[in-house]
Length: 184
Image: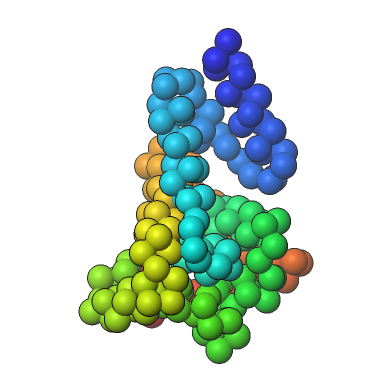
């Protein structure tokens, strides 16, 4: 019964977001307790306190883009749009166009990239985040960044990360800039 109910939730998610969840079906088939454990990542990624939504979602997109060549990033874009993040902001993050990003998004994106690359710049950016929004905002960014990388990593590890695609923001295809991989 549990497999059936979770399977229905997976199917509903697929329909809602036009996203292939076969990797989740594989986890469910292996062990329903595993998919329940995996689902806890959603809560981790959605923890957001004291930080603007666009900044939080932008940092998460940076995390996803470092691990993914399309489908998970597209899902993040779709979710951010549905939550009300402006399309032009999302497009700027995807293109790595800092000049087009609002100030708070630029800070979150720079912090996410510096954290992922383990650069010394992360320290000053971390301090600025705490100064502007507080420690809970920093925790929010850290959780969002970490959680956003789990999905594509699990997907690829299970053999479901083979398809690359362009990212589309409100009908406009964009090329993802993968600067956070350590090199521009």
